[in-house]
Length: 294
Figure (cartoon, helix red, strand yellow):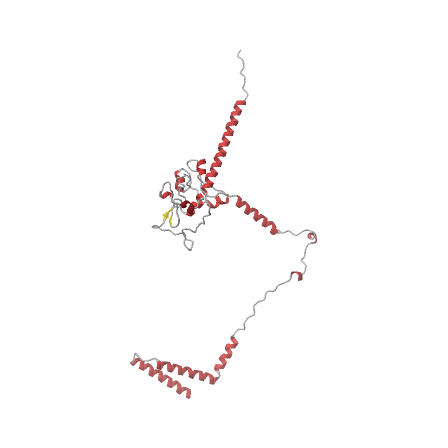
């Protein structure tokens, strides 16, 4: 009976609050919070009298899983194992170590791949020929240039700038960073970025800018950019810098000039030998005697 009266009183109080809120739109919410707190206290007291509060705590403890023990790794001693079965026919033969066999095979294949470096440049309209003077004009540097650093941001991306950037004659990209300036022509085709100058010609841009007598590869007639090569009737080389390094050359220009120079010199020496041998055969060839006419 007491619980029913309390429920009726609570419902009547709630109805009064709803009516007050309908009549007064700006009512203080503290009355509703006090009623809510009172209901919570009554429900807790009721559960405590019935013994439901302790029962819920016991059920919660029973449902909690005990901490599982970590799995232990079992280590087995090889000496404790029984001896492996082996055929009597193979008891005197040493076991084959396949790791050595396949390891040597892999080493041989890798060494062959390193040695067999091929560079295939298509033939152009005119034969690619270089002179001794061009070979003497190949550049050099005292210090090593660090690639892909100058003109790059913190993320390793190249910084392009159409306003403040300078156009490289080799890669034709308008980027930030150090560029060369030719003291001979003083033109735009004398500008080379640091990476292109080092990879394609084996020169350091900082040393070139400090040298008051430095001339660009275009003025030296050793430029190997795609535009200049097509102007000479030769096909572009493509990106062959890594292959050239594996072959032992300092740059692409060193590879082109020194390789084609040696090939032409070999062809010239072979042609000279053939002409000499042909001359010797004609001189030492026995002459046929003509018969006397009757």
